[in-house]
Amino acid sequence: MDLTIRAAEPRDLAALTLLMNLPDYRYGTLRLPFESEESVRKRLFEGGANMVLLVALLEDELVGTASLHRMTGRRAHVGAIGMGVHDAYAGRGIGRRLLESVLDMADNWLGLRRLELSVNVDNAPALHLYQSCGFEIEGRERQSILRDGLLIDAFTMSRLREPPRPAVAD
Image (cartoon, rainbow, N blue to C red):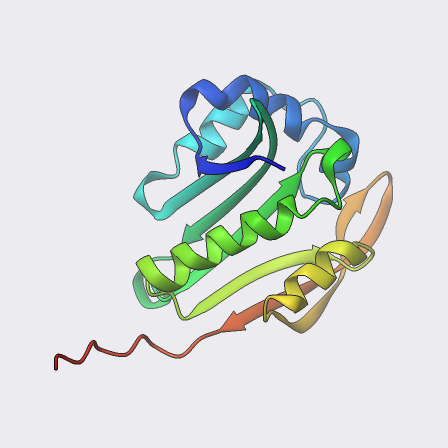
C-alpha cells in the first residue's frame, strides 16, 4: 500500500469536506452532517501555529486525517488529538500510520508530555488502536455525544510521557 502522510494544504479542502461528510467518518467523530467547505476551512485552516493537520493519501485519494492541537499557557505541555479514516479504507492500518505520525510530531518535535483524546465507547477499533499506542482510559463521559438521536458515552483517554532528556556530548 503506497500511503503518503503529509501536512494538509488549502488545495485539500474539497477532498477534506467530502471525507468529513461520509456517514461512517461522521459516526465516529463529533462532525455534524452537511458541513460546508467554508466551515471546514475555518475549523481546520485557521487554527494557527498551535494546530497541526495531517492527511493520508492513497495514490491521489485523500483517505484520512489527523490533527494535533497544542494547548497554551499552563497547558502548553498538552496536545489534543482528533482523527478519522475514509469509510471504504477503515481497517487497513491508515489510522495507525496517521497516529504514529502525530505521536512523532508530539514527542520528537513539540516535546509534549500529555496527549488527550475522546473516543466513543462503541468505537472498538479506535479504542484498540489508541490503547496499543500507549493511551489509557481516564474516565467515562456519560451521555456526552448526541448521535442519531441517542446520547452515547465517550471515554477520555490520555498518554503521558517523561520529558525529553538532554543530549550528552562525548
